[in-house]
Length: 223
Image (cartoon, rainbow, N blue to C red; front, side):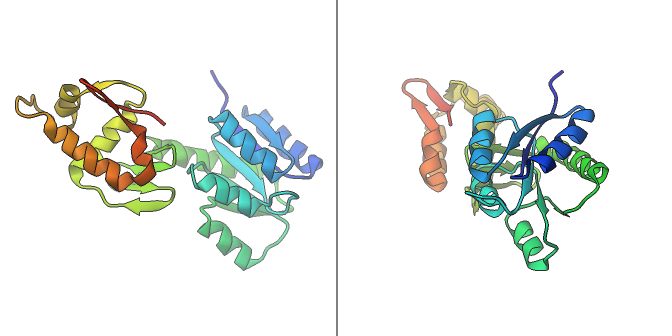
């Protein structure tokens, strides 16, 4: 069984070791980064990091900038660590999409408890919220955002995008799309699919290029 992977970002090696040791004892796999640039590279290289513990004050790229970079593409849970207890810092963190905010010094046991609570919440909502290539699709709220900006989709456009994302990398015939999205055997003109795809691509802007046309067959969603 694979361990849940957590990225710890702090320029103080002593702090990284402290957090690493406590998380490892609780069966988490821990990756470490000593500055923001390394953290961003690691995050996009690994692709399966479940949570980030992120210090604010760091050389090269601070925690705020790391958060901005990652939030453009991912809703991964982030816990911010800071030596300050400034309300403005805390508000900025929440505006940037930080999930928790912990001031140093802190109890490692409390940190582990916060990590477990956030991962439980993330696990409960994972089936409802899908993030892929800068697209965040929330099924329960029937909302889609691209690079953090909400887009307005019709019911069928939403269901079509959800179906594409659920079947990413799979070549889908028009008939299969119609049967699954329209929920009936469609014997009429399959051009209704092309019309909806054209509108969906337009609303998605550059991300519309993720929907590839397979000539003579249908479509494939690739990031």
